[in-house]
Length: 284
Image (cartoon, rainbow, N blue to C red; front, top):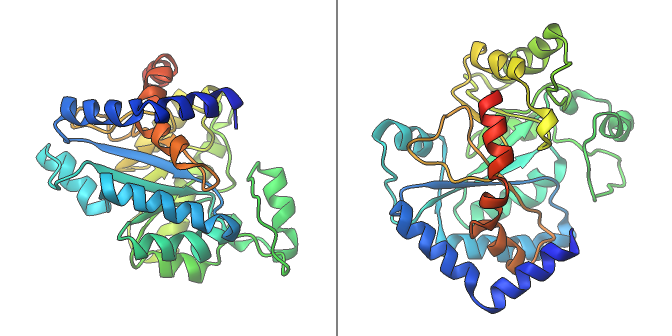
């Protein structure tokens, strides 16, 4: 974590500027928006801080499930008394199932779990190598070596939460990615998830937040695959004017203090990401 960011977040929190900015945004959008956050691994050792974050979210935001998102775009109006909050979890990690999901359910939140579809099928003794080769990070070590959710766990999550595609191999869709690989990472992963879950899967999540991880050909393949929603990571509220294939998220982690979480939600990062977001949206 950038030390300057921590210092800035603490100063803003001490002066209560974060609450002021959040209140101003709610007033500007008339609470008619959804904000999306993304996590990665959720270690048991950080379950207390995750729970504190969820308590904060519960106070200031409303849960968003797939039907809620559909309703928002169809009716062009958020239908709950507080702005919506999407809590998403990338990479199909075991800790998301064991730690995050029960806490989400305790506080009435829907998790949006984005799965690289090759990962659950990797042999347990090869999962750490798969993660290293495909840039999947973790801060958790298990004695039995299993790092990924199993397909049975994903199917269990699917009963109460949202499961979406996160490519096959956690591949960043850079401009140099061959078309046949894009087809595999974007279309084939959709087919695999739909086969495993027994229903359509309409949500895709780009891998990586770096600007180079987005490409026009990747965006075209997502559209051709008939995804309804696509998530990026470029910090911006989802409004009635948002392109459903350019839904932005802001990264947070379970290790973060409430001050850092409030900083992520108050709008400062939205402004800082504006130049990059405009370039990515134009490209895709």
